[in-house]
Length: 171
Image (cartoon, helix red, strand yellow):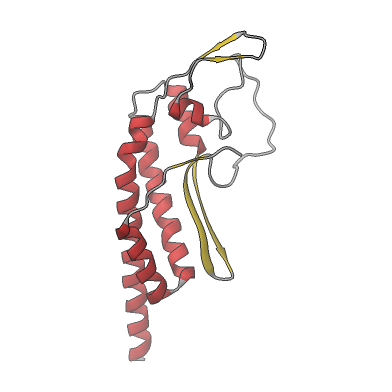
């Protein structure tokens, strides 16, 4: 499956994740990252609605936006957020009859509309056109929002766990 990931690697987030792992453990960190991704996805979808892109492209991008947080043996092993990532909601359902020609936009090819394509042609030389990158600016503007959301959620999870531990100690 094709995926377009928004990579956010900052020292702040890495440091916050490591502190959180030591303070509350991987299971709680994974829960906080899921909550952060869920909120970031909501914010990102609203940004897509206001993007300078055709409505059907913005809708397809919003539908294909997802996240995936994987733990293995209670250890956080993977955290992804982007287009075409996560569970395939509605997979296996019968597709509606299309009114437009072509393959349409979905999780497997949303990167065409997001990043754009160059001039394309078949092996026999038939022209297939190009697609402009409609949503590149939206991705760049969303990176700091996603990073801030993750950082905030991790700090809230740490504070909550510390308060719960303190409450247990008072008993």
